[in-house]
Length: 339
Image 1 (cartoon, rainbow, N blue to C red):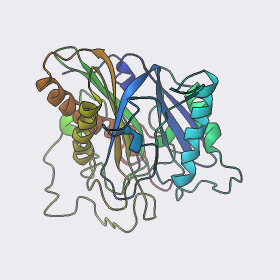
Image 2 (cartoon, one colour; image 1 turned 30 degrees about the horizontal axis):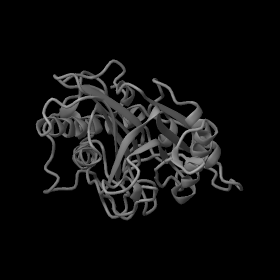
Image 3 (cartoon, helix red, strand yellow; image 1 turned 180 degrees about the vertical axis):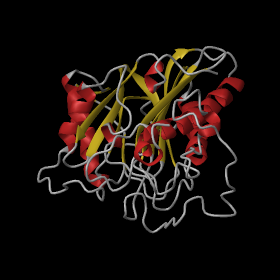
Image 4 (cartoon, rainbow, N blue to C red; image 1 turned 135 degrees about the horizontal axis):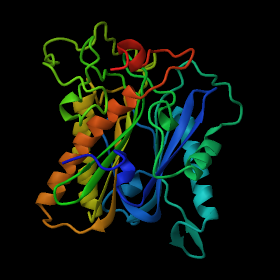
């Protein structure tokens, strides 16, 4: 297994990602889309999720494919971003055929970034426009760190951000991950800035410190002074949102299993993960371009690769965060240096 050319989720051919930000509000939106609809699924393990159209992604639901996925800040306000993306897709004639019209299928999930110091007195919600702008910006390359849905993110001890990673398996299947990291838990182990995800790192993609000897999280808190009442942003709401993707020809049910397996990546990269105050959620995407060689072994390996990619994406998002005046938490680079 090796990283793809870009080490981004867009190494899965056909996928594009776009970001849009409002730095005054300290929030943003990230959209994943493609020229053709793709198989989608979702699995939620956090205790405080906020979503739109995720019920439709269950394997027994009518619609098999979706047109875009949206990750947004803003808590419930951020769900408006999916409306902006839906309008942009409709203008292009995209969507599920329903009689004389087409209805774009745009599942979305939101994270809580309302306590990060930004100006939240916005009047009219900015999120529909951010959704349109993110969709319009969708491309093969996109920014990490303080970008898109990662703009206003924080973790227990550091500024959060938007991360991505990819892997190419020995058989040629490509897997990728995208994460907006805004968690109640910590992504680093110690005062050296080592990441919990370090055992899965390729090269120096998030500092190259190596795993060292991680402390046992069952015996002592991994974060000095960790207060589960404070959440990631000084309030009782957090949430890491993620998307994992592959070019393999997975069924909707197999895609759902990939989403389940990928949650291991969050648990490997964030301590603690899936808390009652996080809305941790993983979308999964399969473009279907590459047939499975083995219908049992291949989905197993793809799920494992998705979890490893997601752990790396979490660390890359925090590692790439940029400092902005007034940040409630330091960036990784401010606290630990260039790495």
